[in-house]
Image 1: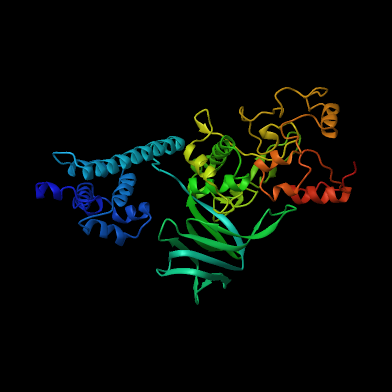
Image 2: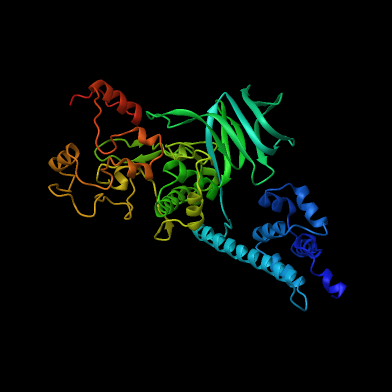
Length: 457
């Protein structure tokens, strides 16, 4: 074989052309290296290293192609061609072809998220979100792998952070905020004493494991925030909200619903108002002044986009996820429910009494034609009237047990859908709780913020 031609068949990692491709492109397009480093989630020094290097891993070239929307992979493919076919050339061609396919897939996902935003000015690929995990005065955590902290040092292993003097006390120093970023894709961190099921009968403390970046923010204590990609977040959500061994189609459906619930406000709200507490004025006919009803929604949270418990969506780390869950997320990647060119408001509840309520009577006084009342059965149950606005019909419906999909005590069926702690409850469909009039008065005042006085009847 001609030695000069043989040298063209070097491995991808050793090919001298890939560093050259970046240098030429940067020079022609005046690329901001600091901004690129942020988008690649690396340090500016690493970007400088890429430009000075004579050879780069193809993975770096691929990630840069995604961020800059320029197909360096295709250019590299042109440069490594030879005049005849060899097994090595075929292997290289296959590698390049596979990565080109991945790049096209990424471009498609980019177009989905770009269309979701609605205008061409916000060009994003997969969004990052901030999830609030825990608020405590002292937090014990374990870094599984090497993490780069915002103080410029690297850490791994068991650590402790303490709230002191309005700062984060860590490793003998005080910081207004502190973050830890994994240096490898396999890096993860464990947090102990995380409360799940807040306010429920099965409330408990557990140790949870998370991917992504770990942040400490001070606000009345240490708030732990996990910064993570949307699809990684959803992998945890659908294996926390439901049994990770559920059927594939049910997992896919939940993935689309949870993604829609998450992205609607995040992509539609301005960043500066994203974490603002919501107070919605409601004009009440017949009263001299307007009533201000505070909706305790996810936008009531500060310092993060969503919480990790039932108030938002359950997000209990990565240990529950199965291959089926990961497959469901991959199969529906970027898919959301749309209506009228906008993402649907996909707030959901597991509670079912055999009939659903209209959206505006449960969540926010806004009408959505795609969230109207339905009967949880293919046909209306025999012997029942389904107009539940009539008092007699509603009383009969509630006091009895009409047939419905959710009206089941079959443990096999329930175990396919519910996690183990959810199954500690046995009366899913009908139950009874008794309150005194004084307890009802206190409950209404506490939940609504309005003192209605003594409940007489």
